[in-house]
Image (cartoon, rainbow, N blue to C red; front, side, top):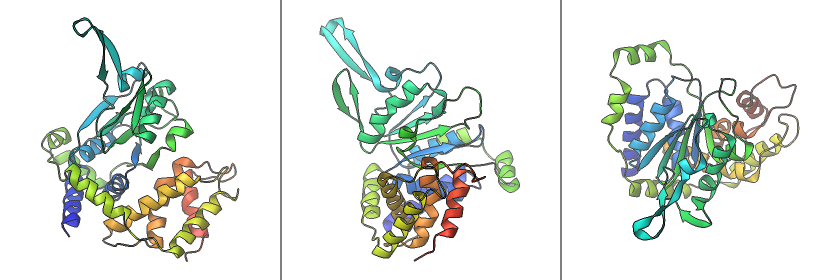
Length: 306
């Protein structure tokens, strides 16, 4: 009961900052409870960075923000060893990746070389600098924002890096009522400055352990495997989901069930998280006429529930 109260407080707090996007906020929280990295993709100015910043502060975690630009180097992110005469040796100066939450703002404006520097950190929760392996703080999340690929000055993220993101979300434009609330309301930057932590790192660890224990029955796993096999059939997508993607769906569905107040996963939980956890890993077949998210939803309609 106490965990539920913490989560409800966190959701309410986030929804006061990001108005009219309760489903997206819900999915962001589910992603972090599942222990995954989050990619928020949309046009500039719809609140991607604000949401990422609000998530980091509300979860009560140490965070750093990096504005990804074309001239950002891997050492700007990871850190560098500098010779210090007083110590008669090299001293490592850690970069911003050594935080519990890294806000990677406009990640696809950096060069592929810098983007790839995140791969080890995202997958292994460690970085290798000049032959030395250094562990990152725990927990460690990357919350990245991304502009659409057709905008000037963007580089498409490599498939290997996209696969490290547990979920990809899009905010979209606010409806008229939500936008009016933004126009009349307080500046979001001022709200972020005063935003309290709704959880502590210890709270988050307990919640993640509770999520991991959420029961998943065999028929639900059968349903998930039916969906995964459908992605591999060649009818919907050029290439199917990997086992890593299947595991990501299970973890996200457990978090969804927890947020719905249940200790078991239902088929509806799988369906609720499937587009967010798989669309960025899939390429529709050439004659689909739909984007990846729409194609996943069409496939969901075609695969029967257990």
